[in-house]
Image 1 (spheres, rainbow, N blue to C red):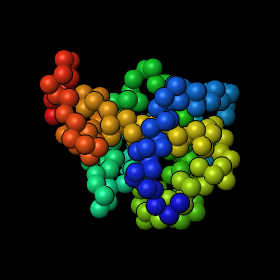
Image 2: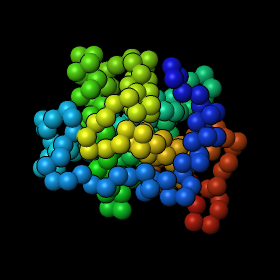
Image 3: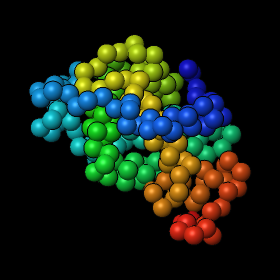
Length: 193
């Protein structure tokens, strides 16, 4: 997986959003005292870093799942950072927030240990290699399931790209424009760009 194919992502990844994929992919909360492989560091009482600390890593992963390229806009243009901040602040997303925080801490620390740089500082090919290892289950971190972590980030990325802008993503309706010029601004209860 040297590059993520945008068309395959949009078509194949959309199935992740159906049937409660986000909730069913979440593991149970780890037992008290369980932490990530990377250690506690600047972690809170549950062995996690705060959302502000991990958001750059989450954004960088999402930007690799749906990159900006010659084919069109990606997660960055859709405003993935503001979408993640808003979505993960929702109390109903507590389990997902916990998993994404644990996953981001592991990814950031694994990148630092293996490459001497934080994940956000790596080149795209090296970022893709780390994500690929997670997808293929080649790593066994404690506190989260790697494949579920990537699937959840993929679902959140697609929501940010294709969802209603009032939820914090799809900035300037970039996703709707990309898939065919949909403009739902005039619908009842709809948002405006």
